[in-house]
Image 1 (cartoon, rainbow, N blue to C red):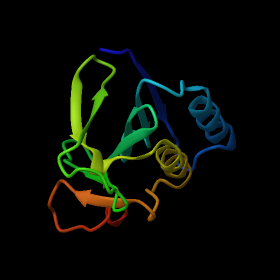
Image 2: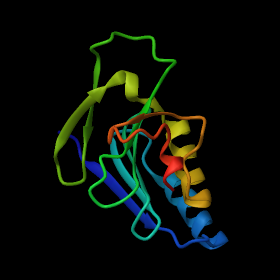
Image 3: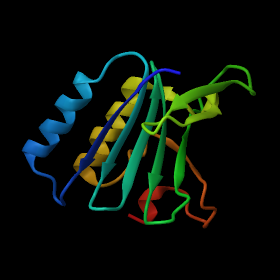
Image 4: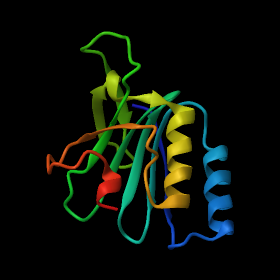
Length: 142
């Protein structure tokens, strides 16, 4: 097992320029390898979580307490259908998610910055509704 680096930000609405600069600087300082667990929340919801393993990451957006939320998908994924990527959480728990759900690290970090600034997820990400409540995007409820 590797060691997971964790980062959490609570962002006021609207976010200050200083907070956004702090988020950007903190993301830039994170190690380029290993496991990361990153949370951006808007006191306390909505929240966007990123689990990262090296150059790939998976996103989950929670709209409220107890929400199954939405998770990212990668429509450009061309690998094996049963391939999994392992992620370690800050509490040491190991999770495995399909590689088809993972996005490039730069896209994940861009989504985190966008969410911190706009309190919405970027429309460029493909989302799956894990809550199965009929919404097509987490932005419909934010």
